[in-house]
Length: 82
Image (tube, rainbow, N blue to C red):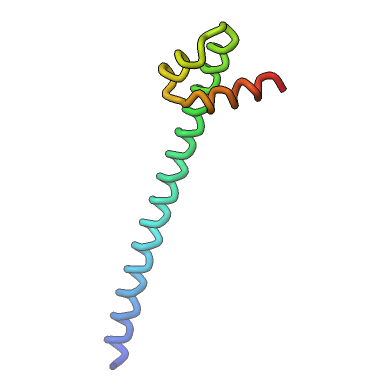
């Protein structure tokens, strides 16, 4: 392999590596954004559930409205009394 081919292969590999790095960074950022959104949504949902519990709402009703299981709701209720 002559030096021109070596340089071409080297730069081609570097371009591929840079592209892969950019894709990996974009995927990591997207995952972080989604996690942040999901965490925020869960926190807001939990606050609504806590408010419903404080106002005497039935576990089955809260489960139906929130989409969370009665087990998850009971766990939140226990956290409230601590």
